[in-house]
Length: 67
Image (tube, rainbow, N blue to C red; front, side, top):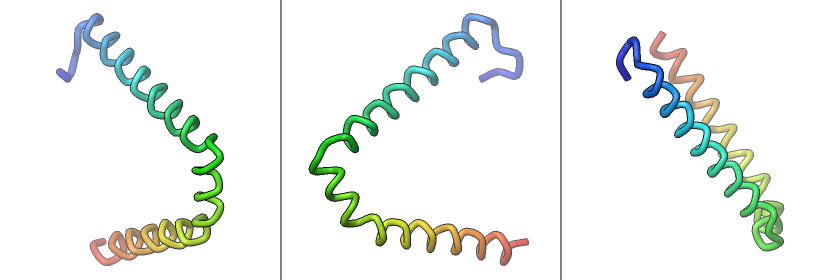
């Protein structure tokens, strides 16, 4: 994007990003609304939370180390 985009380009960029976001979040909602995926997530939730927490801790440690 140029630093001062023309209005049509800016409107197109906003429309594309909005439609991508709507499509992504709708897809995620539809997938997680299904019974098999909901049951799978319930079984794996603790492990996924631990994995995500570990990633956050490692990222924080990386930020501190490279300060």
